[in-house]
Image 1 (spheres, rainbow, N blue to C red):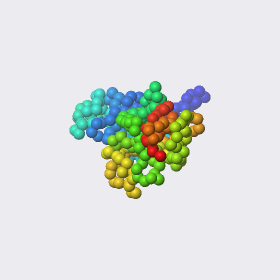
Image 2 (image 1 turned 45 degrees about the vertical axis):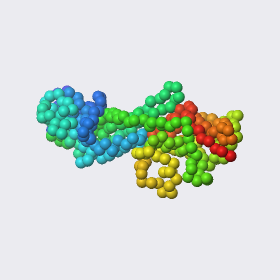
Image 3 (image 1 turned 135 degrees about the vertical axis):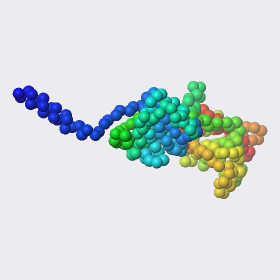
Image 4 (image 1 turned 30 degrees about the vertical axis):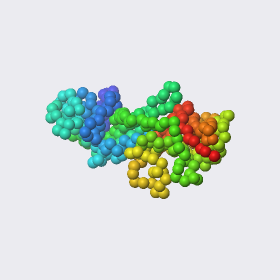
Length: 320
C-alpha cells in the first residue's frame, strides 16, 4: 500500500508542475552561413523548411573592430526585427529577398521577436604578406547573438537567454597605399615641418618637431632614428577625390575633397616597433633624406594594420 501511495504522490507532483499552457519548442540556427539579400537590408539563415530573418540597417555593421567588453548592441524593435518562420516545404532566398517573394512553399508558423537585444562582436579579417609581414584588412566578421529575446508564438511567448544567430562576413577593399618614392616637404610655410607623400586621393603625412635633427644636412653613416610619438606623428588620410599640398595649407580645412578615412600610427617601442629611420646622401650641393618606417602600425578606432618590417615612406631633398 505504501508503494502505491508513493507512486501516486509522484504522479500528482508531475501533474501539478504542468500548467497546461506552456509549450516549449526548440529552434537552433547556430550552424550554417548567414546570407544577405542583395537589394534589402535583410540577413537570413535557412534550415530545410525553416528560416530565421534579421532585418537591420546596414549602418549597424561599422567597419571597426569591437572590444570584447563593448560589443555593438541594439534593441529589438520596429527597426531591428527578428522573425522565425516554418514552411510546408524547403525554402530558399526567393522566399525572402525579391520585392515580391515566392508564395510557395507556404508559411505554416511564424514567431515575432518582441523584446531583447541584438549583440554583435566585430573582428577585422586580415591578410599577411609573408615577405614583408605587412597586413591588410580585407573585411570584417560579425558574430551575432540575441540576448534575452522573447518570441511571440501562436501558443504563447518563449524566452531565450542567449540565442546564437551566427557569423556574418563582409569584404572591403584594402587601402591602396599606392605611393611612389618621392615625398615633399610642406610648402605651406617655412616653419612647417610636415613631409607629404600624395597619390591621387591618398595622403601620407609625417609631422616632426625634431625636423632639424632627423633631417640634418649631413651624410649619415648610420641611420638617424626616432620613435612614433606625439613629437613624431604619422597619419594616413583617404579622401573622395584628388588631394594636394594646398588642402593642408588652408587655415580651415576645405569642404572638398571629403575626408573618408583617417589612420594614425601607434606610438613606438624602443628597439621593437614604431621606429623611424632616416638616411641622408648628397645630390650635388643638396641632400636627399630617405625615410624608412620599421614595424609601424596604423590604427583607426579599434582596428589596425601593419606597414610591415620596413616600409619606405619616401625621399625628399633639402638645400642648405
